[in-house]
Image (cartoon, rainbow, N blue to C red):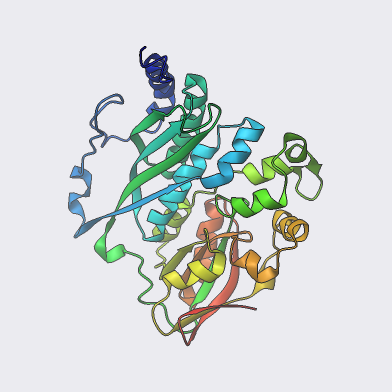
Length: 341
């Protein structure tokens, strides 16, 4: 008996690392001091010494049951983007610049080509957010995961000067809420999605005119990464007072997280057109509207609070980054929370 007969192929692990190196290489930043394959990743902080109070911010998350779609569709090159997005968007919400990312893949059987494809998506996400992929782990766990399945999670670290932290403390009455469009369902609420739509290839491969693509492709569309968009806004001279990443819990849970006590957000549901995918999901699943807004981003992946005088400048910066924005509401004095009307 040996380790390979027990289900763990060490040679496959070595091959996976070799195959993923070409993808990792494109994410490197000059601050990275180590090569892939060591026991840890080293990242120089020398560049950030000029900050008054350099402050580390971090985020960790996974892709969740959206991976089930990847298994059915046998498409693994975009879920890595989701993994990075869920971490770095949270860092950007605090005003931080993502610096580096580490991934963790646990699988039933290490198929080097599949692992490398997953990591290619992670590398794409890192490139989109200017984060270096400085390390990770691939754990082959036979008997724990089915041979053709895996889980994917990650961890990111960023930096921000303390004075530039986005805390929501300065949000006040009559500030304006700007929503930045999402790319679809992103990476939350898929346990409900999988109850509404059968996770069968023939169902996911069906083309819908209103979606402009197949159902599976629409659902698997990677989470949008907003790092460079928020950086554009900052460089335009706008102070973002509050920032909310619309993830699990939708509007009702996430918008209040950016608000100080005494501030109430009012969001107009008719301020933008809800994408067809969400309308289809609600109809097919007979999901009530409040539950939709309490589970999904409904077409808005990020909500910003800005001073009324900064609205035009903010939207111009968002457009310059290639994204779409909407004025979706405002702040009123009142109990901390959100009203959708």
